[in-house]
Structure formats: C-alpha cells, structure tokens
Length: 268
Image 1 (cartoon, rainbow, N blue to C red):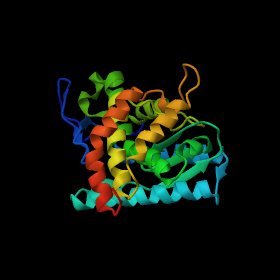
Image 2 (image 1 turned 120 degrees about the vertical axis):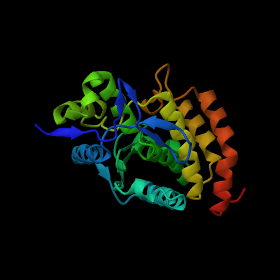
Image 3 (image 1 turned 135 degrees about the vertical axis):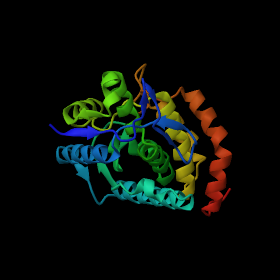
Image 4 (image 1 turned 60 degrees about the horizontal axis):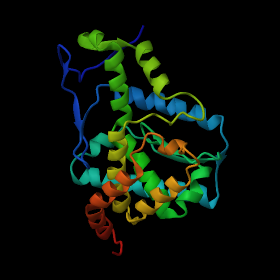
C-alpha cells in the first residue's frame, strides 16, 4: 500500500506547525496535505466531469470565460513574481471551460481547473461580472483552500495517527473523494466562511490587477442575491457570508483594489 508522506507536519502532541501565509491577504492557514497529490487528483476529477458534461466552445460566453481567466491568471503570476513567490505557482496547470448547465455556479479546483456554468453568465452580464466570479474562484485555488479543508479533515479523522508523519493513500483518497465528489457537483467543496471571505478579498485585488473594475463586484453580488428563490439561495451562495456583511467587506477592501486597478490602466 502506498504511503503519503507528510513532510511538512511537525507535531508536538497535536500542536501543529504547517502554516502557509496568503501573500495577498496575509491570512495564515494550516496546510499539511501534499499539493502535488491534490492537483493530480483534481485534474482526474476535472476530466471526469468534462467527459460527462456538455462543454461549450466558440461562443461569446465561452470565449469570455477563457479570456478573463487567462488575464486574471497572468495578473496573479505577475504579482507573485513581483514579491518573489512565483515558485508557489509552479504546480498550476490552468484550464477554463464553460459547461452547459442551468445552475448559477462556477468553481476552481486545486491546480487551476476552472468551470463556469451557463446559468451564471446572465448574472455576470459582462467581462467585469465574469472577472468578479473568476477572481473569487481562482483565489480559492491560489490560497490553498482545498489543501486547508483536506488538512482539516485529515486532522479531524486521523489526528492522533498522524503523529508518525504518514497516512495511507486510501485514507487520503477517501478524504479527497468526500470533499470533491465525482460528477456535476465536483467543484462544490464546502468552504468555510473565512475562506469565502478571503476569496472575496483576494479575488477583488486580482481582478483589479488584471484591469477589471473592482467596483462591479458589489453590483454582481447584489444581482446574485436577488436571484435567490424563496429561502433557498443558489449553491454558489450556500456557505457565503451574509450579503450585507459581504458588501461592507468589499467596500472596505475597495481602496486597495482601486489602486491596483489604476496601476493596470483603469479609469477611476
């Protein structure tokens, strides 16, 4: 049986030192899982999802998803390079696809595998709206939120047995498959509120770095909230912050984002 080594795990009892600091937000998180293993598994799940879905190609919306994704990805690389952190992005192999599905949703798996559903495109309306969603989802991947959630599950389920610094591949795979189920819901990892808020903040900065107007974020989230039917919000909003709190947080982050937007050639 293959054993997955957790070389970054240092345990003193169950006191853990494996912190990763987000270079955009400054937030630190515990990430003890192997990023290469996660990216490989994510790529496999992504291929499985695309093989059973209707992938849209050549339309204005499909091209918009690819173009906006590429611009934000490039902006992220430029920023990471400017602070000497470009090596952190070496394991990403980006793909941007539009899937025919009425769900109001989009996601990005670890390693840079992005999917938008056609249902969310009318809410996005234009490039700026797509950039709001794209920045948010790419930020989940860049911030290592998948690793963080997997690490939390590893510790919750196998905490004591991890003292030896290893766990079986089947144990790790079981955790990944639970968090990233195969099929149409593959990208719907239930992130925590802190991670969603961080993706909002980081995504706002990244879209601005790429030259998209960050002020469009508030109107996008207002449109998304208005799309809710009854007491059941779209899946995209199911674990997200309270709408009023989200808008307040975005407005608090806006001055910094506008500086990036202006530096990218945007008009204030």
